[in-house]
Image (cartoon, rainbow, N blue to C red; front, side, top):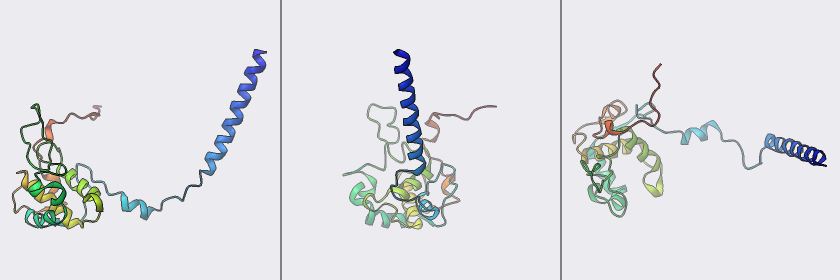
Length: 179
């Protein structure tokens, strides 16, 4: 009797597997496959080395105007915070009891600032900024944090060269393997 029960279970498992494979081959019929152009519109991530940065550029002075118009209502005057995250200050607080994680105190790469602003800001209108506006905002935020001078131009060539204050204080979760 045990053998017959085992054989029935195996037969049932095989039938279920065959049906599942047949359905998976057809797909769930939920929409259509995205086109390369549609994927390209969202495939805009910028890695720490800056590869893939778009043309354009900006300065802190240009960024101040963009910030006042599109960022200040959420991040406060000069990035001081309220109602949302603080963007400026916090240097020297990370090892203390109340660390303040801002662009200038915590972020390891300047290219990450560009990438995040470009993809996610302003919050209610993500990806609405031009490349020049994103470069200018990045320059403004880096300047407010004392990372670059007010007149420095930020673009695809200069942004990857910016050395962030906390860059060397991160431990890689997956360090490169030595061969």
